[in-house]
Amino acid sequence: MSISLSSLILLLIWISMAQIQQGGPDEKEKTTALKDLLSRIDLDELMKKDEPPLDFPDTLEGFEYAFNEKGQLRHIKTGEPFVFNYREDLHRWNQKRYEALGEIITKYVYELLEKDCNLKKISIPVDATESEPKSFIFMSEDALTNPQKLMVLIHGSGVVRAGQWARRLIINEDLDSGTQIPFIKRAVDEGYGVIVLNPNENYIEVEKPKIHIHSSSDSSDEPAEKRERKDKVPKETKKRRDFYEKYRNPQREKEMMQLYIRENGSPEEHAVYVWDHFIAQSAAENVFFVAHSYGGLAFVELMIQREADVKSKVTAVALTDSVHNVWHQEAGKTIREWMRENCCNWVSSSEPLDTSVESMLPDCPRVSAVVVPLGHLYPLQILNTAAINTYLVVSEGFRESWRFHVLTGESRGHRSLLPLTHWMVGD
Image (cartoon, rainbow, N blue to C red; front, top):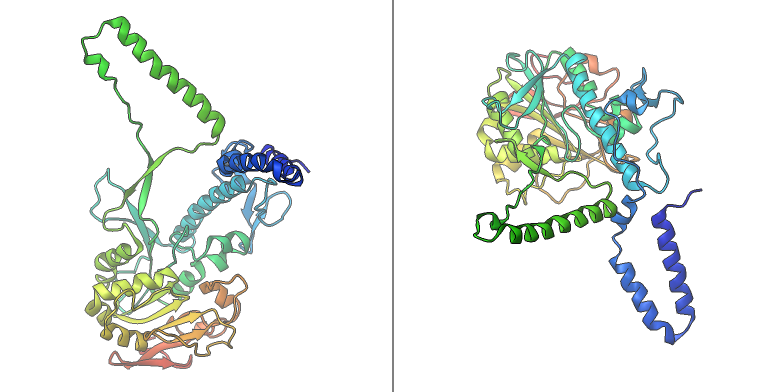
């Protein structure tokens, strides 16, 4: 097994400290000096010296991976699942490789949303100029014109983007477990319009412009020879600094700056923007939300800002491991009452499926979605363990493979949790 330079250096220092400590009190000064040396070592920077270049492929084929017929990511030659520790003792490099693959998968899922799910990619802000930063969402053809029902999907926080529940499930499990595609296809088959939000696409990154410092000597009355001597010093200093930086940090990444997208600079802003410009304008009499993790918080914030509109249009909200907090978000009494009647939060629990789970918050009911091995509940993960995962109000076609509860009733004025045998009027 190979030992990296950084590991060797630390090993030698550790051995030296052990030898000094055995030498008795007279060696305390040397011990102190070595400890001071250790405190000055930047381990992250030291590890970078052993790294191969951070130059990764930009296609799945370049990584020698592909999704098989089951939607599982497999190595093209070996058929093995994805291996994170591609190079031993190079965790940072392996992480960068994983992130590069993740970005390719994000684009791959976007393609699936358009090609397999027949969704349209809609640029936002809707009135954006050619030069300003933009984001996008995905919608079915009938999202705004379907007179009966519209489903809205909101993922959680982190690196996931539109169409995903969890990147690690896509990479380590399969597309059905980690993406929203099964929800979208089933909803479209059952006559729903669909809107897929993209709440984490809040900014674009551009390389930070280099600041050129002009010497004030150019405009002075100093003799030319003196100016040349003065200019020579900073040039040589910069040359030494660049050489040192190249040695100290050979994998230095570009300095980037973030340009935020107008009215979509956070998940909460994004949810309100999509509501105002799309969902509120839709013809659907009944709108249903499926919100995971931070998506639940974004929905509650939407309710706080558009309470009357949401109440008049939204029929039911399915939350999975939602991280919303009605106290911290200062949701009013009328919102909490509405959530108790129209929302439910399926959470990780050791209790049997659909068992009521106690909550300290006076908002929506919380029920068990059984224990999840990975420690965090994902909508399709619940489905794969035969658990209830959403309040989707759907037709009989769902009964055979998915178990659901629905929010329904004879009229908008009376809605309650009913078993699967009850269906909304019009379905």
